[in-house]
Amino acid sequence: LHSIELTETLTMESTRIIPFCVPLTPRESSGVGVVGTITLRGQSAIVWFGWGAVERREEDDCENNIRSDNSTVAVGTGRPPMGSLSVSMPPSTRKGPSRMPTPTSQLVGGSSDEDMMLGQQMSARLAKRIGWPIFVSCSFSDFGQNGVSPALAAGFDDDTMPAAMAEKEVTRILTLEKDKLVVST
Image 1: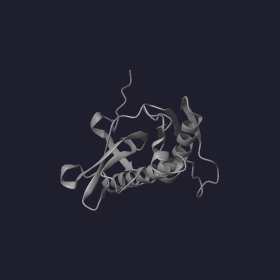
Image 2: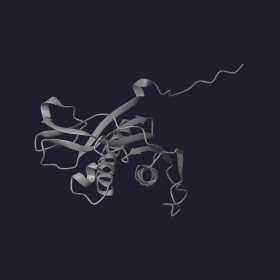
Image 3: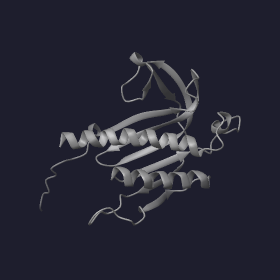
């Protein structure tokens, strides 16, 4: 028998879950927005997001990992249902940046083609920007009891702008987390 020594093992302590939210209407004290989590494990991330309640709180009451704006913090509540799940791997960079498309696979299907496409596109862009494997679960097709998209209710033409706002926030958080890993090594 040969024993294998692992130099680094991933434990629950090395897994971080970071909640985030993006209010659709920044002037309101509360409302519906995009809520989700980013689960970090080593140099990979799982992003899970959908619609949820958003409320403003004083910055002293909240953790620092949530984006603040003029001494108030947007806090998301609720758990969006698990939507389709996509994974993208960063493109290989043998000699300079790759012009090849980012490899993406649909791991779990869903009832909404729009959610599947949104998850695939977002995971591909994030994997290319961050350079990590990125899993994305998107659930925008579940509107809750009233059957009206929160994006339409907030005055957007469709769900693409709130998704882009969420992707921008996720990119900001992942970039900060990646920079922390680079500094610590």
